[in-house]
Length: 334
Image (cartoon, rainbow, N blue to C red):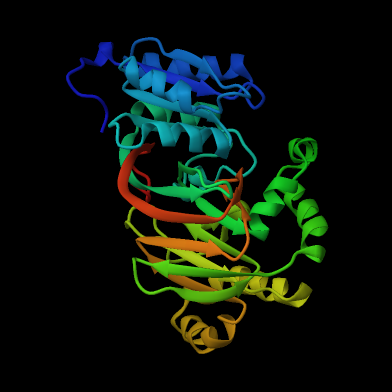
Protein backbone atom coordinates (compact mmCIF):
# COMPACT_ATOMS: atom_id res chain seq x y z
CA UNK A 1 0.00 0.00 0.00
CA UNK A 2 2.97 2.30 -0.37
CA UNK A 3 2.57 5.25 -2.69
CA UNK A 4 2.94 4.23 -6.33
CA UNK A 5 4.58 5.87 -9.32
CA UNK A 6 7.88 6.59 -7.56
CA UNK A 7 11.28 5.22 -8.43
CA UNK A 8 13.26 3.65 -5.64
CA UNK A 9 15.50 6.69 -5.13
CA UNK A 10 12.50 9.04 -5.12
CA UNK A 11 10.89 7.26 -2.21
CA UNK A 12 11.43 8.70 1.23
CA UNK A 13 10.15 8.19 4.76
CA UNK A 14 9.08 10.57 7.50
CA UNK A 15 10.12 9.70 11.04
CA UNK A 16 7.62 10.87 13.67
CA UNK A 17 9.39 10.54 17.00
CA UNK A 18 8.62 11.19 20.65
CA UNK A 19 11.62 13.12 22.01
CA UNK A 20 10.97 11.90 25.57
CA UNK A 21 11.36 8.28 24.45
CA UNK A 22 14.13 8.47 21.86
CA UNK A 23 17.90 8.52 21.86
CA UNK A 24 17.77 10.68 18.74
CA UNK A 25 21.39 10.25 17.69
CA UNK A 26 21.06 6.48 17.98
CA UNK A 27 17.79 6.46 16.04
CA UNK A 28 19.22 8.66 13.27
CA UNK A 29 22.14 6.30 12.76
CA UNK A 30 19.85 3.28 12.46
CA UNK A 31 17.42 4.97 10.07
CA UNK A 32 20.17 6.43 7.88
CA UNK A 33 21.90 3.06 7.58
CA UNK A 34 18.64 1.26 6.71
CA UNK A 35 17.46 3.84 4.18
CA UNK A 36 20.86 3.85 2.45
CA UNK A 37 20.91 0.05 2.26
CA UNK A 38 17.45 0.09 0.68
CA UNK A 39 18.30 2.89 -1.76
CA UNK A 40 15.79 5.37 -0.38
CA UNK A 41 16.19 9.14 -0.31
CA UNK A 42 16.97 10.81 3.07
CA UNK A 43 14.13 10.75 5.58
CA UNK A 44 12.39 13.78 7.04
CA UNK A 45 12.11 14.12 10.81
CA UNK A 46 9.06 15.42 12.68
CA UNK A 47 9.01 15.70 16.47
CA UNK A 48 5.90 15.13 18.57
CA UNK A 49 4.90 17.61 21.27
CA UNK A 50 2.40 18.13 24.06
CA UNK A 51 0.07 19.71 21.49
CA UNK A 52 0.53 16.96 18.87
CA UNK A 53 1.19 13.35 19.84
CA UNK A 54 1.92 12.49 16.19
CA UNK A 55 -1.38 12.86 14.34
CA UNK A 56 -0.69 16.24 12.71
CA UNK A 57 2.92 15.31 11.99
CA UNK A 58 1.75 12.18 10.15
CA UNK A 59 -0.85 14.19 8.22
CA UNK A 60 1.92 16.55 7.07
CA UNK A 61 3.90 13.51 5.94
CA UNK A 62 0.97 12.34 3.82
CA UNK A 63 0.49 15.79 2.28
CA UNK A 64 4.20 15.94 1.39
CA UNK A 65 4.04 12.64 -0.48
CA UNK A 66 5.93 10.35 1.89
CA UNK A 67 5.81 6.66 1.03
CA UNK A 68 6.28 5.58 4.62
CA UNK A 69 5.85 7.02 8.12
CA UNK A 70 7.96 5.60 10.92
CA UNK A 71 6.42 6.00 14.39
CA UNK A 72 9.23 5.99 16.96
CA UNK A 73 7.78 6.01 20.46
CA UNK A 74 5.17 4.30 22.59
CA UNK A 75 1.60 3.18 22.04
CA UNK A 76 0.30 6.77 22.09
CA UNK A 77 2.59 7.83 19.25
CA UNK A 78 1.72 4.72 17.23
CA UNK A 79 -2.03 5.28 17.74
CA UNK A 80 -1.85 8.94 16.70
CA UNK A 81 0.17 8.18 13.57
CA UNK A 82 -2.06 5.24 12.64
CA UNK A 83 -5.13 7.46 12.97
CA UNK A 84 -3.65 9.90 10.44
CA UNK A 85 -2.58 7.14 8.02
CA UNK A 86 -5.87 5.24 8.07
CA UNK A 87 -7.19 4.76 4.51
CA UNK A 88 -4.43 6.91 2.95
CA UNK A 89 -2.35 4.14 1.33
CA UNK A 90 0.78 5.36 3.16
CA UNK A 91 2.52 2.62 5.13
CA UNK A 92 3.28 2.65 8.86
CA UNK A 93 6.50 1.31 10.35
CA UNK A 94 7.08 1.03 14.09
CA UNK A 95 10.19 1.57 16.18
CA UNK A 96 8.75 0.45 19.54
CA UNK A 97 10.16 2.56 22.38
CA UNK A 98 7.28 2.66 24.88
CA UNK A 99 6.04 0.81 27.94
CA UNK A 100 3.60 -1.63 26.37
CA UNK A 101 4.41 -1.55 22.62
CA UNK A 102 1.21 -3.51 22.13
CA UNK A 103 0.74 -3.27 18.37
CA UNK A 104 4.38 -4.25 17.87
CA UNK A 105 3.90 -7.23 20.22
CA UNK A 106 0.83 -8.43 18.37
CA UNK A 107 2.68 -8.14 15.05
CA UNK A 108 5.68 -10.02 16.50
CA UNK A 109 8.00 -7.11 15.72
CA UNK A 110 11.40 -6.88 17.45
CA UNK A 111 11.14 -4.93 20.70
CA UNK A 112 14.77 -4.65 21.75
CA UNK A 113 16.62 -3.54 18.62
CA UNK A 114 16.35 -0.14 16.93
CA UNK A 115 18.55 -1.43 14.11
CA UNK A 116 16.20 -4.35 13.42
CA UNK A 117 13.09 -2.14 13.56
CA UNK A 118 14.64 0.39 11.15
CA UNK A 119 15.67 -2.37 8.74
CA UNK A 120 12.09 -3.72 8.67
CA UNK A 121 10.79 -0.21 7.94
CA UNK A 122 12.74 -0.01 4.67
CA UNK A 123 13.03 -3.66 3.62
CA UNK A 124 9.88 -5.27 5.07
CA UNK A 125 6.52 -5.91 3.45
CA UNK A 126 3.13 -4.34 4.09
CA UNK A 127 0.59 -6.23 6.19
CA UNK A 128 -2.97 -4.86 5.98
CA UNK A 129 -4.52 -4.57 9.46
CA UNK A 130 -7.86 -3.37 10.80
CA UNK A 131 -8.30 -0.05 12.55
CA UNK A 132 -10.80 0.46 15.35
CA UNK A 133 -12.89 3.62 15.17
CA UNK A 134 -14.45 5.17 18.28
CA UNK A 135 -17.26 7.69 17.85
CA UNK A 136 -17.73 9.09 21.34
CA UNK A 137 -20.39 11.38 22.72
CA UNK A 138 -19.28 13.61 25.59
CA UNK A 139 -21.52 14.58 28.53
CA UNK A 140 -22.06 18.01 26.94
CA UNK A 141 -23.36 16.42 23.72
CA UNK A 142 -20.31 16.77 21.44
CA UNK A 143 -19.44 13.89 19.08
CA UNK A 144 -15.74 13.15 18.56
CA UNK A 145 -14.10 10.44 16.46
CA UNK A 146 -10.72 8.84 17.10
CA UNK A 147 -9.01 5.65 15.93
CA UNK A 148 -7.32 2.88 17.88
CA UNK A 149 -5.28 -0.12 16.82
CA UNK A 150 -5.12 -2.22 19.99
CA UNK A 151 -7.92 -1.70 22.51
CA UNK A 152 -10.58 0.66 23.84
CA UNK A 153 -11.72 0.57 27.46
CA UNK A 154 -14.68 2.08 29.33
CA UNK A 155 -14.85 2.16 33.11
CA UNK A 156 -12.26 0.86 35.57
CA UNK A 157 -9.61 0.16 32.93
CA UNK A 158 -9.78 3.75 31.69
CA UNK A 159 -9.74 5.11 35.24
CA UNK A 160 -6.56 3.14 35.97
CA UNK A 161 -4.96 4.63 32.86
CA UNK A 162 -5.95 8.13 33.98
CA UNK A 163 -4.55 7.58 37.49
CA UNK A 164 -1.21 6.11 36.38
CA UNK A 165 1.66 8.31 37.56
CA UNK A 166 3.78 9.43 34.56
CA UNK A 167 6.98 9.66 36.60
CA UNK A 168 6.53 6.17 38.01
CA UNK A 169 5.66 4.82 34.55
CA UNK A 170 8.93 6.23 33.23
CA UNK A 171 10.86 4.59 36.07
CA UNK A 172 9.28 1.14 36.31
CA UNK A 173 7.30 0.71 33.06
CA UNK A 174 4.07 -1.27 33.12
CA UNK A 175 4.36 -1.91 36.90
CA UNK A 176 3.05 1.64 37.26
CA UNK A 177 -0.37 0.30 36.20
CA UNK A 178 -0.25 -2.07 39.19
CA UNK A 179 0.24 0.96 41.44
CA UNK A 180 -2.72 2.70 39.78
CA UNK A 181 -4.87 -0.42 40.17
CA UNK A 182 -4.04 -0.68 43.88
CA UNK A 183 -5.33 2.88 44.34
CA UNK A 184 -8.36 2.66 42.04
CA UNK A 185 -9.79 -0.85 42.47
CA UNK A 186 -10.71 -0.73 46.21
CA UNK A 187 -13.04 2.24 45.72
CA UNK A 188 -14.31 1.41 42.23
CA UNK A 189 -18.10 1.27 41.84
CA UNK A 190 -19.73 -1.04 39.25
CA UNK A 191 -22.13 0.58 36.80
CA UNK A 192 -24.88 -0.42 34.37
CA UNK A 193 -24.56 -0.33 30.60
CA UNK A 194 -26.85 -0.91 27.66
CA UNK A 195 -24.97 -2.33 24.69
CA UNK A 196 -25.82 -3.43 21.17
CA UNK A 197 -23.79 -5.63 18.80
CA UNK A 198 -24.04 -5.12 15.03
CA UNK A 199 -27.27 -3.13 15.37
CA UNK A 200 -29.13 -5.91 17.19
CA UNK A 201 -31.46 -5.25 20.16
CA UNK A 202 -29.84 -3.83 23.27
CA UNK A 203 -28.61 -5.98 26.11
CA UNK A 204 -27.94 -4.91 29.69
CA UNK A 205 -25.07 -5.60 32.07
CA UNK A 206 -23.81 -4.54 35.49
CA UNK A 207 -20.05 -4.23 35.04
CA UNK A 208 -16.71 -3.02 36.35
CA UNK A 209 -15.18 -2.39 32.93
CA UNK A 210 -15.64 -3.24 29.25
CA UNK A 211 -12.75 -3.71 26.83
CA UNK A 212 -13.13 -3.73 23.04
CA UNK A 213 -10.08 -5.14 21.29
CA UNK A 214 -8.60 -5.18 17.81
CA UNK A 215 -5.97 -7.70 18.93
CA UNK A 216 -5.50 -9.96 21.92
CA UNK A 217 -1.99 -9.86 23.44
CA UNK A 218 -1.21 -7.44 26.27
CA UNK A 219 1.91 -6.35 28.13
CA UNK A 220 4.01 -9.26 29.34
CA UNK A 221 2.75 -11.30 26.36
CA UNK A 222 -0.50 -12.07 28.23
CA UNK A 223 -2.97 -13.64 25.80
CA UNK A 224 -6.05 -11.75 26.97
CA UNK A 225 -8.43 -12.43 24.05
CA UNK A 226 -7.10 -15.45 22.16
CA UNK A 227 -9.57 -15.23 19.26
CA UNK A 228 -8.77 -11.60 18.44
CA UNK A 229 -7.03 -11.01 15.10
CA UNK A 230 -5.70 -7.80 13.60
CA UNK A 231 -7.03 -8.52 10.12
CA UNK A 232 -10.42 -10.23 10.54
CA UNK A 233 -12.69 -7.16 10.47
CA UNK A 234 -14.02 -8.09 13.91
CA UNK A 235 -13.79 -6.48 17.35
CA UNK A 236 -13.50 -8.77 20.39
CA UNK A 237 -15.22 -7.51 23.54
CA UNK A 238 -14.66 -8.49 27.17
CA UNK A 239 -17.35 -7.48 29.67
CA UNK A 240 -16.00 -7.85 33.20
CA UNK A 241 -18.09 -8.04 36.35
CA UNK A 242 -15.49 -8.22 39.09
CA UNK A 243 -16.21 -8.59 42.80
CA UNK A 244 -13.23 -8.08 45.08
CA UNK A 245 -9.76 -9.58 44.94
CA UNK A 246 -11.13 -13.06 44.22
CA UNK A 247 -12.78 -11.77 41.05
CA UNK A 248 -9.54 -10.28 39.77
CA UNK A 249 -7.75 -13.55 40.64
CA UNK A 250 -10.26 -15.46 38.50
CA UNK A 251 -9.56 -13.18 35.56
CA UNK A 252 -5.80 -13.58 36.06
CA UNK A 253 -6.28 -17.36 36.20
CA UNK A 254 -8.29 -17.31 32.99
CA UNK A 255 -5.73 -15.20 31.13
CA UNK A 256 -2.56 -16.87 32.40
CA UNK A 257 -3.67 -20.49 32.86
CA UNK A 258 -6.55 -21.10 30.47
CA UNK A 259 -5.44 -18.85 27.59
CA UNK A 260 -1.72 -19.35 28.13
CA UNK A 261 -1.59 -23.10 28.92
CA UNK A 262 -4.83 -25.08 28.60
CA UNK A 263 -5.72 -23.73 25.16
CA UNK A 264 -2.63 -25.37 23.68
CA UNK A 265 -4.10 -28.91 23.86
CA UNK A 266 -7.37 -30.56 22.88
CA UNK A 267 -7.91 -31.77 26.46
CA UNK A 268 -7.25 -28.28 27.79
CA UNK A 269 -9.71 -26.75 25.33
CA UNK A 270 -12.38 -29.18 26.51
CA UNK A 271 -11.72 -28.13 30.13
CA UNK A 272 -12.13 -24.49 29.06
CA UNK A 273 -15.43 -25.30 27.33
CA UNK A 274 -16.81 -26.95 30.46
CA UNK A 275 -15.78 -23.97 32.59
CA UNK A 276 -17.13 -21.29 30.24
CA UNK A 277 -20.55 -20.82 31.86
CA UNK A 278 -19.03 -20.15 35.27
CA UNK A 279 -16.37 -17.91 33.74
CA UNK A 280 -18.99 -15.71 32.08
CA UNK A 281 -20.13 -14.48 35.47
CA UNK A 282 -16.76 -12.75 35.82
CA UNK A 283 -15.74 -12.14 32.20
CA UNK A 284 -17.98 -12.54 29.18
CA UNK A 285 -16.48 -12.37 25.68
CA UNK A 286 -18.31 -11.32 22.52
CA UNK A 287 -17.41 -10.80 18.84
CA UNK A 288 -18.94 -8.29 16.42
CA UNK A 289 -18.05 -5.80 13.71
CA UNK A 290 -19.34 -2.98 15.90
CA UNK A 291 -20.67 -2.29 19.39
CA UNK A 292 -22.59 0.62 20.87
CA UNK A 293 -22.18 1.22 24.62
CA UNK A 294 -24.36 3.50 26.77
CA UNK A 295 -23.41 3.64 30.46
CA UNK A 296 -26.00 4.81 33.00
CA UNK A 297 -23.67 7.67 33.97
CA UNK A 298 -20.65 9.22 32.18
CA UNK A 299 -17.59 6.95 32.33
CA UNK A 300 -13.92 7.41 31.40
CA UNK A 301 -12.70 6.14 28.02
CA UNK A 302 -9.22 5.08 26.97
CA UNK A 303 -7.86 4.21 23.54
CA UNK A 304 -4.55 2.34 23.31
CA UNK A 305 -3.57 3.61 26.75
CA UNK A 306 -4.45 7.27 26.10
CA UNK A 307 -7.20 8.80 28.22
CA UNK A 308 -10.04 10.58 26.39
CA UNK A 309 -12.13 11.85 29.29
CA UNK A 310 -15.74 11.03 30.15
CA UNK A 311 -18.25 9.73 27.62
CA UNK A 312 -22.01 9.37 27.86
CA UNK A 313 -21.95 6.85 24.97
CA UNK A 314 -19.49 5.39 22.48
CA UNK A 315 -19.90 3.54 19.18
CA UNK A 316 -16.92 1.36 18.26
CA UNK A 317 -16.49 -0.27 14.87
CA UNK A 318 -13.85 -2.02 12.82
CA UNK A 319 -12.50 -0.40 9.66
CA UNK A 320 -11.23 -3.59 7.95
CA UNK A 321 -7.64 -3.61 6.67
CA UNK A 322 -7.53 0.19 6.59
CA UNK A 323 -3.84 0.43 7.51
CA UNK A 324 -0.66 -1.12 6.09
CA UNK A 325 2.03 -1.90 8.69
CA UNK A 326 5.58 -2.99 7.86
CA UNK A 327 6.56 -6.49 9.01
CA UNK A 328 9.46 -8.75 8.01
CA UNK A 329 8.81 -10.82 4.89
CA UNK A 330 9.54 -13.99 6.90
CA UNK A 331 7.27 -13.05 9.83
CA UNK A 332 4.44 -15.41 10.91
CA UNK A 333 2.32 -12.26 11.15
CA UNK A 334 2.82 -11.42 7.45
